[in-house]
Length: 197
Length: 202
Image (cartoon, rainbow over all chains, first blue to last red; front, side, top):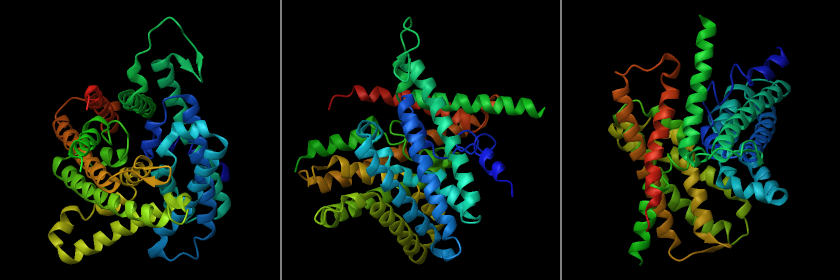
């Protein structure tokens, strides 16, 4: 099995946000600024990698019927680690991400990868898969939050990019998030449809 | 008894802080199940039932187990486990007692376990109604109302979206925007409309 292939597929071909459309709640809710998006992406990647390693190690011991609860407990453990360390070392980020940090537990990407990949393959391949998926999720989040921050606030990572326009506030509120992701997926579909022809 | 406060919580969770359109909780099912009105509404009813019951159960656990023994850091794990087992339990009971009801929303129940709205409401309750490790006044009733309101708000958004998407079947949508992207754009417009409610002063 090609390990690099497992890594790369998460970045584009099976990108969790744009292609499979999973794990939307955090994607949309925290993408108000690039720093938030990046923080969320890193947290989710850590949870993905940690839980994928463990699940792939216990995949032969866990009985079929109770596998979902086992996966959820494993994932929840890693989420708790992230939650507590974020509270201790990055309290500002932790406050602005709010309830969306504990909600990584129910992020469909994490459980989806556990079910679809790491419960079937050995640990090393699972790490690559998780890293790819996590980074794919992170760049999607950073892209969305960059668009929203630039349009809604006129800044990127807190630096002004253009002072001469009045940013429409709605881009950093809820409707802006839905509009951005809708149009982005539309663009991606357009180019992939064009490529096929 | 403070009826005004209860009504405030109810209105604010249904309209102002609508779970789907302004908090983005439960979006996956919102996009996935909102193609037709009937399944959308049955999903909404199932979610309302689960969020309400989950509010009751997680409040009891938080108040009587986690806080007295200083175990607040186990909040995420214990909540998700309890919710998952509750959903499983409900599914088994419904299957045994009422096959008709099971057919109506049996397939949606397992999906609800990983619905962010349910865990979201439990965590929100714990954040809002327990300040400094102490329950605020009437926090139990407030939690249950918030759970119920969250479910109603979810059902409302689902119902509206499903109605629009049924009409959309006959519309000329650009090929690249078909299905998921156009749904997001519509959701964005709906959310813009719901933003108007935030002007409410209650």
